[in-house]
Length: 149
Image (cartoon, rainbow, N blue to C red; front, side, top):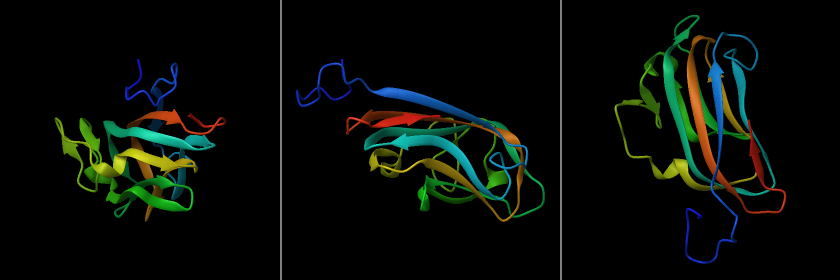
């Protein structure tokens, strides 16, 4: 059964989930200033839901480390630069002010059409500790549409 059941979705086109867990340690692709690869996107896809949850407090090498969530060529497409130390265990990171316990998913993290890789971007200083889990629920729009971690 599809998430959308209006009859326009092909039978067998089920909502798909891919998960990426990042353990930050301050090295390239894992917390150094620059890109943290999350999901590789091919073709055209619709991101039904994109949810980031912190399982271990993010820490920084020195003050001013930030983390943004976006796509290649638009690093803040989903979430703007957020102070890394404000993203703590048990919090959903869905905007620049992470939330504990529960929160409504904002429009910018659901029903989004993309053709670019999903990335995190570390700014200011390195993020040298913590764990972030990112779940992406998606559907292909083109024959080659795919999202992989």
